[in-house]
Image (cartoon, rainbow, N blue to C red; front, side, top):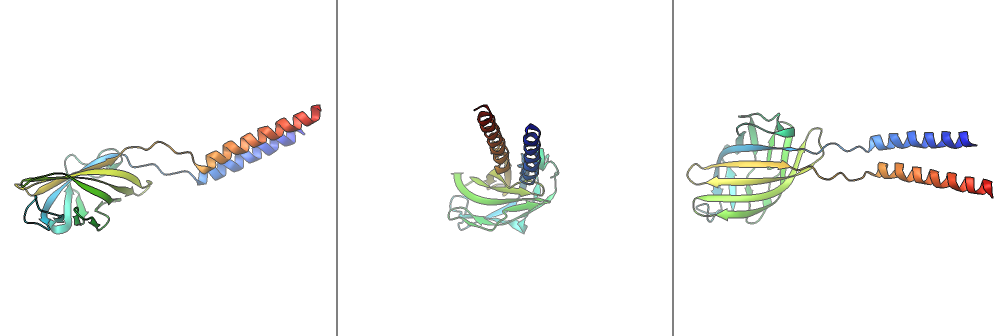
Length: 190
């Protein structure tokens, strides 16, 4: 009887490993990248009254020294596709930017500072890349009147791991098996 119980428990353990293996999550993206390029303010005559950003030529370049962490494949000078957006009333064309296997979708944006010569925006979004789970990312858009350039910096922080359903199934199966074994032993001794 004991051998049968041990074999059953071993079989349940192996089966739960297969279930857990199929539910494994991909890693989150960690790192940052800076982008530079030219833009024109839209919806107003200057940075104080602007309501949007028009990326001139709809492209940018990866800034120096390139991406870090998981974004290290993004090297200095690499072309980046950009999409215009408004920030006073959010009207987004996502992805906001894409380069190689990475894209960034803008979710929210707010004005941190603006005057006639500079504009700073902070936003949140989702970064996606081949081989990674969608990852929350943040950015800072800094623009100045004199050079008509911007820099974008973004990245993500690793989120705390969340227990997967398969892991909980494995734990639950083990606890049920232990409880069943204990009940059988109790019945035998009675």
